[in-house]
Length: 119
Image 1 (cartoon, helix red, strand yellow):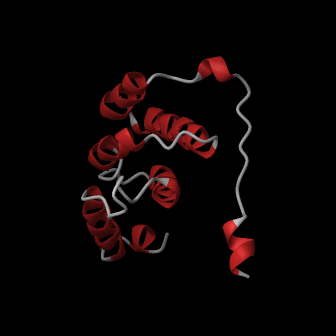
Image 2 (cartoon, one colour):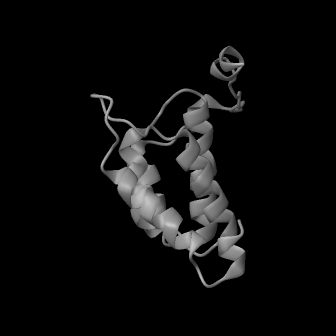
Protein backbone atom coordinates (compact mmCIF):
# COMPACT_ATOMS: atom_id res chain seq x y z
CA UNK A 1 0.00 0.00 0.00
CA UNK A 2 2.83 2.41 0.76
CA UNK A 3 4.27 2.03 -2.75
CA UNK A 4 0.87 2.96 -4.23
CA UNK A 5 0.79 6.19 -2.22
CA UNK A 6 4.36 7.06 -3.13
CA UNK A 7 3.67 6.73 -6.85
CA UNK A 8 0.46 8.78 -7.02
CA UNK A 9 0.58 12.21 -8.65
CA UNK A 10 -1.58 14.86 -10.29
CA UNK A 11 -1.33 16.31 -13.77
CA UNK A 12 -2.61 19.77 -14.58
CA UNK A 13 -2.53 20.96 -18.16
CA UNK A 14 -1.51 24.54 -18.77
CA UNK A 15 -2.72 25.72 -22.18
CA UNK A 16 -0.07 28.30 -22.95
CA UNK A 17 3.35 28.15 -21.30
CA UNK A 18 4.09 31.72 -22.38
CA UNK A 19 1.40 32.93 -19.96
CA UNK A 20 3.50 32.02 -16.91
CA UNK A 21 3.80 35.22 -14.83
CA UNK A 22 7.01 36.34 -13.17
CA UNK A 23 7.53 36.03 -9.43
CA UNK A 24 7.25 39.80 -8.95
CA UNK A 25 3.92 39.88 -10.84
CA UNK A 26 2.52 37.15 -8.61
CA UNK A 27 3.69 38.96 -5.47
CA UNK A 28 2.14 42.23 -6.63
CA UNK A 29 -1.18 40.56 -7.42
CA UNK A 30 -1.23 38.96 -3.96
CA UNK A 31 -0.33 42.22 -2.20
CA UNK A 32 -2.57 44.71 -3.95
CA UNK A 33 -5.34 42.72 -5.54
CA UNK A 34 -8.96 42.21 -4.59
CA UNK A 35 -10.20 38.83 -3.40
CA UNK A 36 -11.22 37.93 -6.97
CA UNK A 37 -7.77 38.72 -8.36
CA UNK A 38 -6.18 36.81 -5.47
CA UNK A 39 -8.34 33.80 -6.37
CA UNK A 40 -7.12 33.95 -9.97
CA UNK A 41 -3.53 34.37 -8.78
CA UNK A 42 -3.81 31.41 -6.41
CA UNK A 43 -5.21 29.25 -9.23
CA UNK A 44 -2.24 30.21 -11.40
CA UNK A 45 0.21 29.50 -8.57
CA UNK A 46 -1.34 26.09 -7.90
CA UNK A 47 -1.21 25.21 -11.60
CA UNK A 48 2.45 26.19 -11.84
CA UNK A 49 3.29 24.25 -8.67
CA UNK A 50 1.47 21.12 -9.83
CA UNK A 51 3.45 21.33 -13.08
CA UNK A 52 6.71 20.97 -11.17
CA UNK A 53 7.89 24.41 -9.94
CA UNK A 54 7.62 24.41 -6.11
CA UNK A 55 7.84 28.25 -5.77
CA UNK A 56 9.04 28.25 -2.14
CA UNK A 57 9.66 32.01 -2.20
CA UNK A 58 5.90 32.74 -2.28
CA UNK A 59 5.07 31.09 1.04
CA UNK A 60 5.48 34.22 3.18
CA UNK A 61 3.52 36.42 0.75
CA UNK A 62 0.67 33.92 0.76
CA UNK A 63 0.72 33.78 4.55
CA UNK A 64 0.67 37.60 4.82
CA UNK A 65 -1.87 38.46 2.14
CA UNK A 66 -4.08 35.41 1.55
CA UNK A 67 -4.39 33.78 4.96
CA UNK A 68 -6.20 36.74 6.66
CA UNK A 69 -8.95 36.74 4.02
CA UNK A 70 -12.47 35.61 4.97
CA UNK A 71 -13.40 34.69 1.37
CA UNK A 72 -14.45 31.03 1.37
CA UNK A 73 -13.14 30.24 -2.13
CA UNK A 74 -9.81 31.87 -1.36
CA UNK A 75 -9.55 29.84 1.86
CA UNK A 76 -10.17 26.62 -0.07
CA UNK A 77 -7.39 27.48 -2.51
CA UNK A 78 -5.16 28.35 0.45
CA UNK A 79 -5.67 24.88 1.93
CA UNK A 80 -4.87 23.30 -1.44
CA UNK A 81 -1.69 25.36 -1.43
CA UNK A 82 -0.81 24.15 2.06
CA UNK A 83 -1.04 20.56 0.85
CA UNK A 84 1.47 20.97 -1.98
CA UNK A 85 3.82 23.69 -0.72
CA UNK A 86 7.33 22.66 0.40
CA UNK A 87 7.25 22.29 4.17
CA UNK A 88 10.89 21.42 4.78
CA UNK A 89 14.01 23.50 4.22
CA UNK A 90 17.22 22.33 2.50
CA UNK A 91 18.38 20.61 5.72
CA UNK A 92 15.19 18.57 6.05
CA UNK A 93 13.86 20.58 9.00
CA UNK A 94 10.42 22.12 9.20
CA UNK A 95 10.35 25.69 7.90
CA UNK A 96 9.77 28.42 10.48
CA UNK A 97 6.85 29.76 8.41
CA UNK A 98 4.93 26.54 8.99
CA UNK A 99 4.37 27.63 12.60
CA UNK A 100 2.36 30.57 11.22
CA UNK A 101 0.47 28.17 8.95
CA UNK A 102 -0.43 25.91 11.90
CA UNK A 103 -1.56 28.94 13.91
CA UNK A 104 -3.77 30.09 11.02
CA UNK A 105 -5.34 26.65 10.70
CA UNK A 106 -5.93 26.57 14.45
CA UNK A 107 -7.61 29.99 14.33
CA UNK A 108 -9.88 28.80 11.51
CA UNK A 109 -10.85 25.73 13.53
CA UNK A 110 -11.74 27.92 16.51
CA UNK A 111 -13.56 30.61 14.51
CA UNK A 112 -16.95 31.79 15.70
CA UNK A 113 -18.33 31.52 12.16
CA UNK A 114 -19.47 27.94 11.58
CA UNK A 115 -18.83 28.18 7.83
CA UNK A 116 -15.16 28.96 8.42
CA UNK A 117 -14.91 26.21 11.05
CA UNK A 118 -16.58 23.60 8.87
CA UNK A 119 -14.65 23.91 5.64
